[in-house]
Picture 1 (cartoon, rainbow over the protein chains, first blue to last red):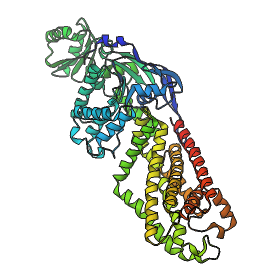
Picture 2: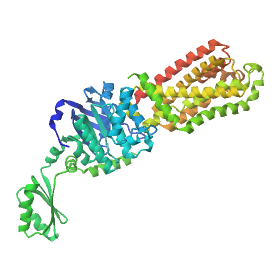
Picture 3: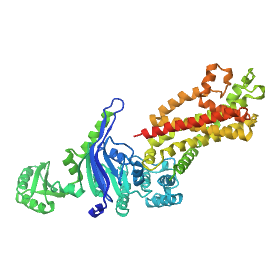
Picture 4: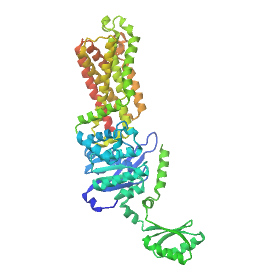
Length: 342
Length: 257
């Protein structure tokens, strides 16, 4: 989805400053500092991706913004209303799609939607019409009159999102919307979220630990780690800040690699050259402009090249750069910590 | 949208869910009949004890019917908190709470559903007792007051169960607390036995037992309002108790976070 900066001209939809929250440890477990001075600003009508590993504080942030958890300190304003002082006004302005399923398994899809709409204040007729419209749009109209407990995981997740949208909220919170979905369902949900953000001009705060999801959907990304926001920017800005593209060249034999590294280091614009097995890795400000010169230099040094490639930096690189660990490593750290706590 | 409309919508949801579990509905109707017929047979001769309430004009089945009505209502409503625990476990509660749902409506819909369920069961119990030969001089007026008392007791116990569920958030804890309270409440009362024939401390305890208030109201109303002052004062006490426990449960809602 393209970044259109003019859409942020409508003011600030979510403004969070210095949020802290510590959960008391139960049964002798140490207390967990879920939020440690988190700051966040989301322009009205934009999609913000909150990116970080499990345990970084993403869900706690969303729960505070949805008035479900009170912060220990700090302020959070959603759609112009303070979450601590005017929770009722915030609840009318937001849609909340939790990380776990939130539908009632003993109700039909349509009953779930109609009840959600009516609790948000829609009249009986408007609620029924809106429910039918959303069932149709999310492609689950055929199952509308079946108990949700018989629905597939992907269908139920669509219903979760539809429930969050039923009253056309100004601000929508999506807590890991596609976790656990198969690739087809994920792609379909991405398309729907992207459409919502652009057509309905909704402000969306999306938490995810999928880099491709943030890249695909978010206008801006905030990387959170250990309860703090580490860096913020558009996905492109964050990647550009890494200074350049990755270059990889696979050579025919390892003996030639030392020669190749030496030759590559002399090519103007090529930096961070390092061998990696039979592959030479390097970075360059402009990969496309530099790759031909690099290949020419290798040819001149009589290095036989098998493959050559060029990659834009990924958000994983950004994450690694700002937190000092890869997202995968952070995930397994968090999993270990959770295992110790439990 | 008013809290009243929300209450109606949420009560309808509970009713739909209950009726979708046929075993639940059947058990709710079979259980009071088992109690009525079992206790009715087991204790049939206690009315022959000299000094038993009503003397020889009242059969034990007639004496027992209001007791079984209230035992059924209390036993059902003790499970009311389960709704909150299930909804919390399923994420449904978070969704309600993140929407402008009245906390009062969440509570009162649960109370209302158990009041309806208890009233239907009361009608069945009184009907079955009548088919078995019991006669109630109080007539339809007596039945109506019995239903009011049943609804109040159901609301009272449902509010208590909801408060326990909201504080403990565990099914096991809710079952434990309910079991601990229900049996003493049932037997420190005139539900199955005239307390005038029991040790005096039991009669004293029964006077402070809301469960017994409901039994006393229903028994006197069905018997034809022999002591209207007793009926109205116990009904008033039940109303006060319902309001107090509903306030307690609401404060338990506010403590969540």
